[in-house]
Image 1 (spheres, rainbow, N blue to C red):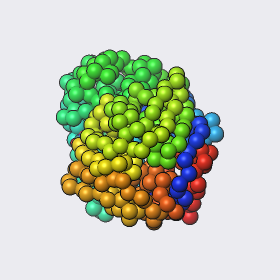
Image 2 (cartoon, protein in one colour; image 1 turned 45 degrees about the vertical axis):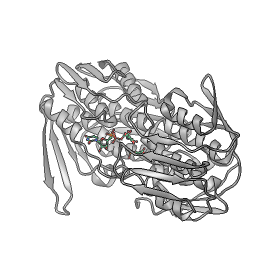
Image 3 (spheres, protein in one colour; image 1 turned 90 degrees about the vertical axis):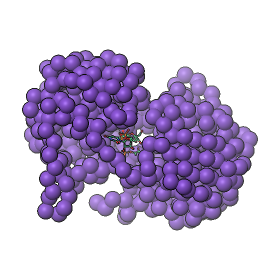
Image 4 (tube, rainbow, N blue to C red; image 1 turned 90 degrees about the horizontal axis):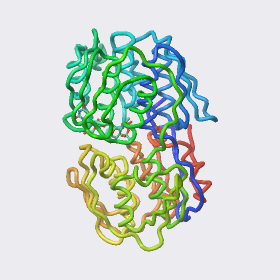
Length: 430
Ligand SMILES: CC(=O)N[C@H]1[C@@H](OP(=O)(O)OP(=O)(O)OC[C@H]2O[C@@H](n3ccc(=O)[nH]c3=O)[C@H](O)[C@@H]2O)O[C@H](CO)[C@@H](O)[C@@H]1O
Ligand SMILES: C=C(OP(=O)(O)O)C(=O)O
């Protein structure tokens, strides 16, 4: 399967969205949970509220490639994993290089098979995406990391675990998957581990929760300092994946960009962090009613300043969507991308639709308001894809989004969910 040439979305813009939408389970929570479930040598793990997205399908394929039994029951949104049969330490390039979450399988391989061979790591191309915090942490715990160049020129990373020992570890900056990988490596290591400058994202905390319920001894989640006391084994359990705050943020913006009113089932205002405040400043009205978040926009959108940051700062994964939204705001908006050094490819796609955006390094100025017109545009990465869907919902005429495999990596049933709210959107796959 090619990396995204085969899926398109066609959107006819101009319809305000109304109704109730179900927020999917979190991509960035379920992927580490699949990695965690592979650490259980006995029993079966049952994950509920699993988002039916391409990254989860790839994770299931990868789990099977290394010998686990994994069954994704799509209608039930339930994934059952039996990792007792884990047998191969090789994360093959054809699957592993298609999603970032593949690297979250490494701790299980180190503990269960004593080594991990990484033929490739994928994920959206957002500029440099290093893994040094992970490698340095594994090394401090006693692993050896070597790189070999394959015949085709690709690097293959070989990590040999030996007996992993607890120690003092750190992230230079609070890496999301870095924190999860070090926690998982420490969970079955000998002795005590301290991880400094740990990530605070809600998905990291949900992953700590599943690991604790599997038998891990972890404290300090959400403080920046995490302590892990190694245990001898982890057990399969049942866990419900938290809702996806980025999916929720995109639907908030879908209401805002079309001038509609939506009830988001499962969305949490708290999980949106600073993004909730920025959207409120732009003119979105929120009413949290228990586990349902109601959103609407009545007045014209105001421009905004956004600085992306680790949680609870403005999530970088909502940066592209808010760039699309700010094209419609009444004045210039300023966006400063601090997490990734190459996450502005969206700007040229929005320009094809009539937007006026100046990009300078990691800063962008969006000169709203502009009338966007439908065009043929390309989803260079997942959130570029969600932003282009938003732009298409509010543009005049037909927007065709190509390379939309990237969108399907992270959002489930996009066309169906938006159509139910009154949007005119279809998905086409070759
Ligand atoms: C599967 C998953 O959970 N993906 C999310 C995760 O990606 P991911 O975990 O890859 O993102 P990180 O938090 O690790 O990366 C943030 C920044 O730190 C740098 N860095 C990271 C690790 C490292 O060892 N060395 C290093 O320099 C990266 O290059 C990047 O500039 O968090 C990102 C930031 O919230 C989100 O956009 C992704 O959706
Ligand atoms: C960057 C993202 O994901 P990944 O880390 O899986 O590439 C994302 O979800 O926008």
